[in-house]
Length: 429
Image 1 (cartoon, rainbow, N blue to C red):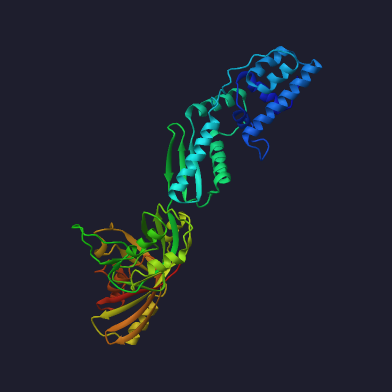
Image 2 (cartoon, rainbow, N blue to C red; image 1 turned 180 degrees about the vertical axis):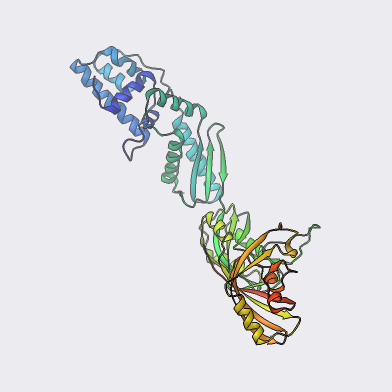
């Protein structure tokens, strides 16, 4: 009996293995679109029964050739009975799943629905750990028959359960930004929930000094500084129904340095946030009410890779420094200072003040420009535009020769930074 490829392979499979509609359809899942595998398997069995009926009626196939198929295919067995031919029924259990798949699907749908209701969220993804015996048997059948058109039972279960939860209960599968991923372990019949972080890109301003980015905790458990930027962000976790908020800054200024002007980019990460559709304006209002010394603007939700982009940015920055010198400096001295540092590369060993937390290393950074304005005989203000990562206080003082060239070296007098503000940060996201 000559059959088309699909029916020929189905005949070959069913002669060796009794399969339910869903497991047979899954072996041909890559053929045809828009079909559920149970529908696909049922259609294949129906067409195969029709072909066998025609072949038996025409005498082009013998009963003995199709009796084995009748044991695992009720459609073929009914054809034989219609023709008055007795056919032995099979055991009735699918070789791959043991007729368990429909029960597992129903359990999964209800388990996901109950968990979504419990958590009070509506956007989800389903993950499945399928029964290991089913996984091994479907591979065995595919290998034995040489089929390459099959999909895994794991893929099918994820898709079918997700669609059923959507269609029955109105929850929304979301592949881009799910509130939760619900993992169904069908070996242990247990449910696990993974709640992803909510990541929000924003900008902050620090209007006061002695404010750290994250809490600075001493060995005795006390805080060195009373206020940290991350403190203000904890209110965001409450609004988004998360566990806690974590700050990821695009670089950082010292605790005694203000962040003015353009502000500095950062990413707010809310761990285990159940509300990923939270109104950012509400979050922004909440965190801005924390302290008059801090300001925040939230822009958009972002993917995880944006955190690395923000933290690794090497864009330029502009600083305002108030500089005190040991001897008087003239307008000509400041003009010379501006000319000398135009496009100048500075070499810096790790500053002595940070050696306790950073290893000794040499870095080279470019000063793009310096603009200086004399305020008094030994006091001037400087606007310094430089590559990110340049230590500005040491650029001014020289750090006992560890930074060269420096303002102290070029002016030939001791110079110290009395005040420092960041007034512009180039955003590279």
